[in-house]
Length: 145
Image 1 (cartoon, rainbow, N blue to C red):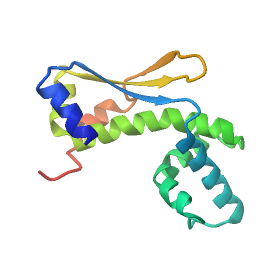
Image 2: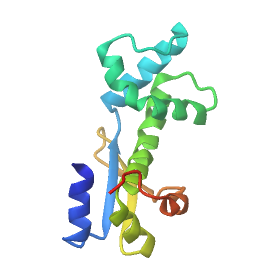
Image 3: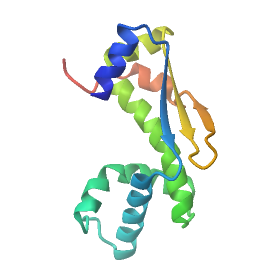
């Protein structure tokens, strides 16, 4: 698993920096945005296809991006904001599902930063640490061990 691999990297190899990176023009995020907007237009919440069902896990990310934009109806703008938001969701999940990484971040031994790779330019925009890092570090693990 991704979490297990990162735990090995941090705990056994001594990695000090974890970067959770998304990328522009993400097909999954674009698909989830289109499915969300389509469902809103239809007034339906149920997925209309198998693909919609697969993309449903990203719906909270696209909905949050839409709220953050405060009424922007552009699917492109929503998808771009959702891509960035999804990076921070990845950080949240890592911290919630890995007690050992959470403890190392809390002690300052490890840092987790978000980044966004622009596939058109090849440039990476570093987003920094999660804006609610202190809150995430105070939470207990999402998994019982």
